Amino acid sequence: MKRESAQGGCAMKNPRKMLIDRLTKLGLSINEAKAYETLIELGVAAPLEIASASGVPVSKIYLILSELERKGLIEVQHGRPKLYRPVEPKRALRLLTEEYLKIEKEALELIDRISGIGRNLNTGTFWVVKGKRNIVDKIRYLLDNAQYSLAIAAPDKLIVQVSNNLQNAIENNVNVSLVIYKTNTKTTKYLVDDFRRDAMVKVREILAPSMFIVDDHKALTYITATLYRGIKRREEIALLVEDEDFLPVFSAYFKYTAWYSSKLVSDVDEFLSKPRTYCIYFRAVEDVAHLLSKGIKPFARVQGWHITNTREKVVLEGRIVKAYQSPDKTVYNLTLVSDNGKTYMLGGKRCVIEDVETEIITIYPNR
Image 1 (cartoon, helix red, strand yellow):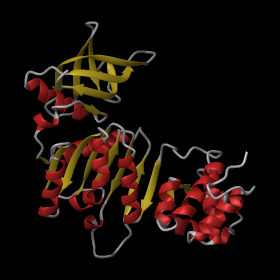
Image 2 (cartoon, rainbow, N blue to C red):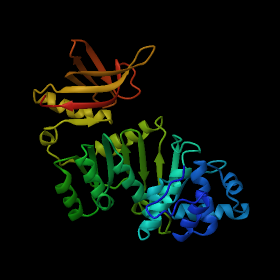
Image 3 (cartoon, rainbow, N blue to C red):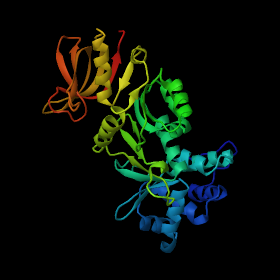
């Protein structure tokens, strides 16, 4: 069945040709439009595969893909061969232009008709994002799509650029652990005043690579230009990590390099006066330990895996009665007494000695 736009402009039989036409009107060359449309269909592909499917000459395909990457429309995974994938269509078209809203709507309708027939875009690996504008836009997209928790360590000037997205996440009850790298006293003070009540905020005087961890499911690490050695100008690059087997590396970096070495500026009691949900487990243990030190045994709801031979999915509810952190902060767990009187030791992801591997935990201090 044919789909039509409000103006009837998308009723043609060949949505591929029509999408290519729209993309050229948005400023792409005909070969760029063909390559991008082909990549939308394939999902993930190598250059020679894209050239063969799109009709773009092999002699030009690498230059075309490089230009699409520069414009923020595709992402690359380095290897042999390189693999390319399109960024999220709505974000790509907005990056290309915000002027042609009508054409953007029509192009998205066409994409909807031909997408989903290729390979899964989430391949659970590593992707490179090039260029400051593209990196900032990717960060905004990650913040907008957070469901439970964010762990962020970044320079004050970068956080200002995404502050609206961060505020929206907080308003959607996303639990934010924020480390601000101070480069400007006034900028840092502005951010502290803005977020210290609704996020757990720390300030670090020394710059380090930026880190954005979303729901302990995806991470983006970014070395800003101020950290580059030498005077030679170079394009800024970020690494997007979608492989959950590698995420503990980034969580550990956030914990030991950014979080523990920074100065707390939030009021912990105020922050913990309302329910909070955690995917970064050490932060849950840290906050529960504070509540227990105040004589509060908080109610908790836990989603995770019971560590048995069959590894069963569990949902537990009960009171947290103990929080443990080893002196070197490498071992940490919680003890929960469930509503039926059973006691469980809760660990984080890939825990060994505990009863339950926790994926998500919500703490209710006043329940």
